Image (cartoon, rainbow, N blue to C red; front, side, top):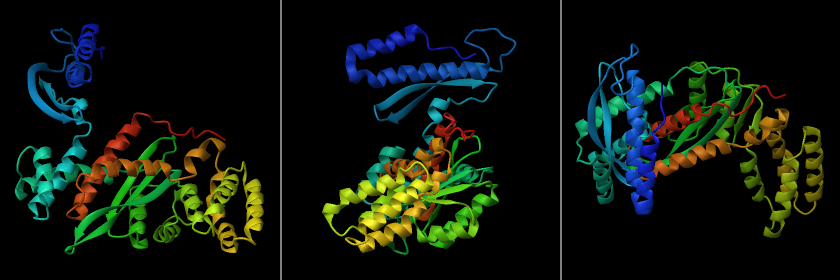
Length: 387
């Protein structure tokens, strides 16, 4: 029964922008959000304002003011209230988990005495008040319950699996150390993307990757036919232990970067990159093998270490040629996960330093939940019927 925002309401928004330009953007967004929330309340109630209908599930109960900080400044919203039915606008739900997690991460630093004047300022700006350890613990428990449920939700058939790691700074044993954030993304049998799991550990050691893969399998992960990752030593051992026999694709982007370390002179880099790209862009495996043999022979004399490295490593990046042509572009690298990592970095750099692993896991999980929910609105990532 969702209706569209009426033209008079849109006219008001247009007039605000016409009169005030970008300075009126915040007011325009306020108007649109307030109207969107009214529409959502009508849907929740099963009736429009003042409408008599047998489908009505509850009644409107006025509005509650709420100030929301946004990139446009403070938005003064009027949140619709209900009686007889539970309701909360989804327009306000988006981003709240990660905002709560970020506040908690910063607040923990403040409470545990490892903060700076800058962190104290951020805490006040984000939380709007001073916090104490009891408040932080209570809020953390509620949020952690929600995040843990998402991390441990059941999984199903995942034909394509993408794995990668990024690093965050945490305080450990009186020192600041780099902490590995291990992330697994999958493409389901229906062709949808899904963030499957995340783990925070002090290193990318084999045991940590093995634990993450084991947890995915314990939650029902099965049917994996293809894995994409970089050439992490610990990940390689864990993959062979938990996903024995599953074809592995080495990320072509990272492979190309690694190859440059074996080029003996800067002047050769462009030529080597072009030759390697020719191999990776081959239409099928026999043609790729033929081109690889050619460049190995070409550089055997002028750059023997490069030639040996290419011969030993490039075949690991050609597994993708066994997939349907329509799937190859998106599954030849870990770029999908790299984009996720950039979004995580954008959110975690505000905190700068996490007081512990749990704090980092909390914020990263909240961000991943948001991304995964966004993906659910665009379900088809690959057409799995493609031959």
